Image 1 (cartoon, rainbow, N blue to C red):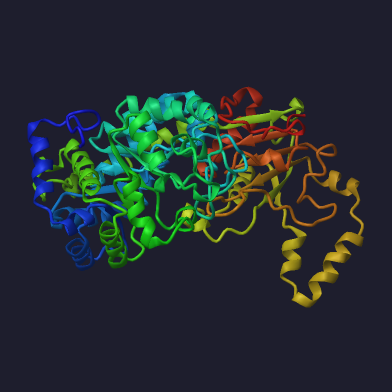
Image 2: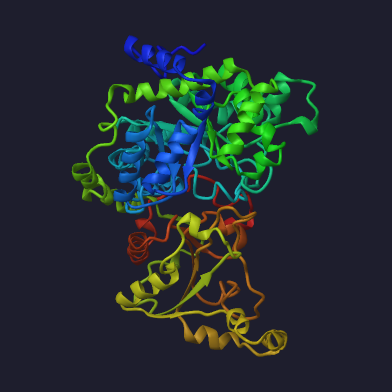
Amino acid sequence: MVDLRAVPYELDDEGVEWVESTLAAMTLEEKVGQLFVNMGASRDEDYLKDALDRYKFAGVRYNPGTAAEVHEQNRILQENSAIPLLIAANTEAGGNGACKDGTEVGYEVKVGATADPRYAYELGRVSGVEATAIGCNWSFAPIVDIYYNWRNPIISNRSFGGDPQLVLDMGLAYMEGFQESGAVCAAKHFPGDGVDERDQHLSFSVNSLSEEEWNETFGKVWRGLIDAGLPSLMAGHIHLPAFQRKYDPGVADEDLLPATLSREIMTDLLRGELGFNGVVVTDASHMVALTSSMRRADLVPTAIAAGCDLFLFFNDPDEDTEYMLDGIRRGILTEERVDEAVTRTLGLKARIGLHRKGKTEIVPPAEESLKLVGLPENTAVFAEIADRAITLVKNTQPHILPVTPERYRRILLVPVDGPPNPAAAFFGAGGEKAVDLLAAKLRERGHEVEVFESAISRIGRLPEAERGAALQNMYAGKAPIKDFVAKYDLVINVAQVVGGMQPVERISWPASKGTPDLPWYVHEIPTIFVSVNCPYHLADAPAVKCYINTYDPRPVTLDLLLDKLAVGAQAFTGVSPADAFCGFIDTRI
């Protein structure tokens, strides 16, 4: 049924016997519990014990907390679970995905901009050290989606690049670094995001490549990872029509399904054609690309029947458990398929040696292990990557650089925002804005700096009845260009658009006239545009002649940016890992 002696498990006789005897001792209800990964609602000990006793789930993904908080939670979980747990962390950008005080190393796009896989290895290594120190043994990373559509709002900065070979090299390096700590990776999101321009959290998402195109791109990446022993992967709620039609030529358009519900994708393609023998976990089960496909009572068992082994997150644990059991009763899901799924999950646990450890030995003692979070040699990696990654994408007026107080004493900083994003806090946005950090740092270097406030912002503070007239007056009023040019030596636009769980990740230009909100002045005064998040803002600011991607707004990164600006173009070593010109001609001129 499952070859536990083969890659990626490679179990000995003891490991195989543990898996088989553990499975044989379970009731059907206990096996069904082992099909779920729980999202912990609390770190309270009574809650954790009760949830384990009631639902007997296979694994846990938890809400963010400090290293000490997560360590204690994981200790309670492992010491009270009848079967050792897979405890997942989202270490996409570093150990900060395992705990709030963990080490950020850098988003995938930033690592990709170094063009050096050793930094992906470092991203994985630091993530593994810190995740395992607090008792995590499974990571939902690396992200191996490919940038093919700059409009995709969920990939954003979460891909190593647009070249399949680069993505594969970086993914392999990450996996090597992370798994040195004895934990396992779940690469994501099979069969591959980055082609569509929609977010699977919010709507259907389709990988529309032909069979040949997919094999040369995403297929190349997944084959490379599987050949290297990838132990687990996360399936995205992403349609792949070419392959569903390959294995079911008569399928109607209305019957096309996201990969997580498609036997053709999960079993025929992944298990059969690609030969993947490891564990498959679904992406989060609340995403609309999944939930809008069929009734939840049907999709819960269908995901496992299709070939997924673990179902990520209950909606309601009692209800979802009953849906799974009822799916067996209705013939959607067979007990044989349940046994196969649980065998794979147990095999993954045995691969990392959980069966050999006593309950009190699985999570390392806090006194020593917590010292591994935030080691100086690991935090230093962030600055090294930033130094290599910051990218001068475009500079068609080379005389603009360098930026020194002698050349540009008076600088206007113009904040550039995107649409309001209620989910911004979920993606770590918060704290001081990049434009304010840059203002303070430029002043320290001897510049006179003004931070522009949009007229739209000022008008927005007026009583509602007065706003229309104020906006009309703004357009009717005079705004002499000579006055603006006489006031400043340089303008720097600072774009900080937070993406994620929104239909677009684009600049939101205000309806202004003659004000610095829009860079109308690129031929009037030296202008530099800096994006500190999304790498694709040239599409909405093509007229700017000097454009830079920093890939994050951290103070260390901004200091390095200013160092490079003060030296000139030769100080920038980053290489855009994808098409930052977004396929347009006007963005290049």
